[in-house]
Length: 122
Image 1 (cartoon, rainbow, N blue to C red):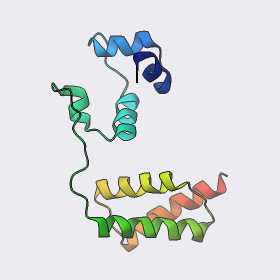
Image 2: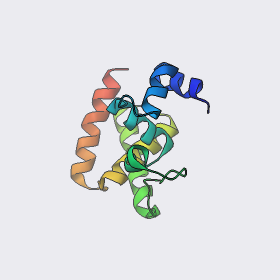
Image 3: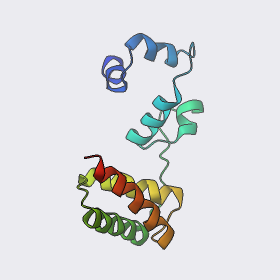
């Protein structure tokens, strides 16, 4: 992706992107988060990395745990009548996984409240 396309995707001008690259101005934290989330890279590498190959923030995946989180999310979507695209369910499961949340009663309760709020906003 070129500078123009990346700047456009982030909602900023190419001039802003270049100023971040040259360390003239720090990028907004929201941009750092978006880049890390969208490209699955480590924030430390993005801010301080010297090599050209990004460090992924995902380590080895415990697939049974991830699958339990996905199943919980899908069941809660049905329960509250919320239709999420598969990539959104996967992003949510990945976020819960990375934060250390598991398929327990507290996680289900918090997620259900959030999903109910989202379903009412549709």
